[in-house]
Amino acid sequence: SLWQIGFELVMKLRDVYGASNVIATDIRETDSEVVKSGPFETLDVTDGQKLHDISKRNEVDTIIHLAALLSATAEKNP
Image (cartoon, rainbow, N blue to C red; front, side):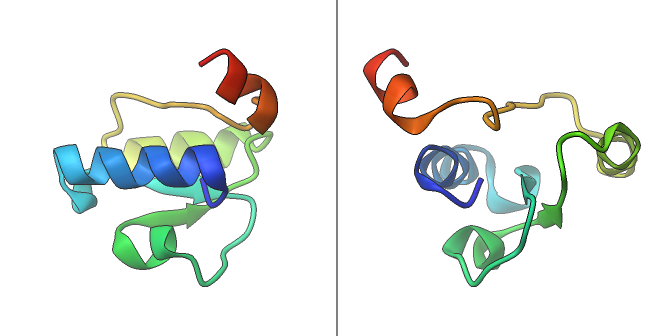
């Protein structure tokens, strides 16, 4: 969620639903506005157990998975 599509989506969702209600994840943490503006977890999407733990601990009811989207393709066909 630290890159273009994820960044913009997280920031919009935080505007709509409140920053504390949108948990961003990425494989690494950086000095990004996403990290500073609300909940953030470091997560490798292939780690199903950690994904489960984060979801359960935060009572997550919706996951938007963008890791497989290529930016140029997704921008042409959202």
